[in-house]
Image 1 (cartoon, protein in one colour):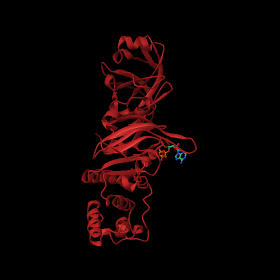
Image 2: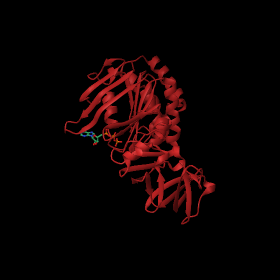
Image 3: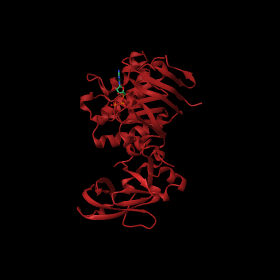
Image 4: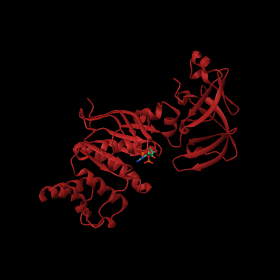
Amino acid sequence: MAYLTLKNINKIYPNGFHAVHDFNLEIEKGEFIVFVGPSGCGKSTTLRMIAGLEDISNGDFLIDGVRVNEKGPRERGIAMVFQSYALYPQMTVYDNLAFGLTLQGVDEEVIEQKVQNVAKILGLTDYLERLPKALSGGQRQRVAVGRALIRKVGIFLMDEPLSNLDAKQRVTMRSEITQIHQRTGASTIYVTHDQTEAMTMADRIVVMKEGYIQQVGSPYELYFNPVNVFVAGFIGEPPMNFSRGTVKDGKLMIGKNAMDLSCKLSSDRLKEYEGKEIVFGYRPEAIVLGAVAGAQQITASVELTELLGDNTNVYVDIQGVKNILKIDPHDTPEMDTEIVYSIPTESIYLFDGVTEKVIK
Ligand code: ATP
């Protein structure tokens, strides 16, 4: 049996708003799970139900096979780090770390040992006598993580813990949190709206939209096998290119480019979709410049190029359809020129125009 089981979890707020619908998930001991999705999709609500800070309207939440719906946060053996790390400004780092244990009446010597231990894990040993205002954002964030870490718990919850940091600090803290996770071995559920955080940190990602789980899978699975247009567009930066069109004689027109769908769909499937709408998708980084035999070719005009150093984003127009390509900076084309590029068959995704589910 899984360590954590969420079975048909629903949240209906007192005002009648149904924020989370039939959330089902099993989490193993030591797994790093990331909930990701746009603002308002129900990530925090689900996390707060797991923490015991929000009632579960319907469904069961089990820890190690025991239903804990009615148990409070402390009884669940859960520690949580929030977006605002709310350190006590008048207390030193040491006292901030020790506070929870002091309240519990834990022996001074034990507290000292635990604080030193957590400080060592987090690289805070030299800062223990400082006040929070004398720390950088990243160091404050580490103190907040340390406060949660100091209680030995099996479950660690984090709600957008890096959102107050600058881009550089986020990258550093990302890998630090991953390392801390590996050292503690606690099951971790991490909420973010940032797909890069999700991709780099998670064992498995849960993509949510409007209160519903869209897909659960490893970063690899979500990137290469998205189940629908939403997941395909959410994972990956820049996002996947999409064009809608109606299938005619087994082909889909994108601008003046006739895309031959027979390379992706069986003849039965093609017949089924004749006259219907399909969403054609490919990732910006999946293209090859020039015409490649056996691949789909597209002719497009270059509207804008952005040199980012390791690659160039090329904004193209295919007779009104706007797409982005990610290419080697040495191949950056001139603006206002026409280019030809190829999309390998295996990099093409087709989705049903109505359900937006992937067509297999
Ligand atoms: P964000 O990334 O912006 O924090 P989220 O995915 O974490 O978003 P939630 O905070 O879980 O989203 O909110 C989900 C939905 O529930 C939102 O539409 C929100 O407005 C609504 N909601 C949250 N709290 C309440 C409440 N107390 N009463 C009614 N509706 C609420």
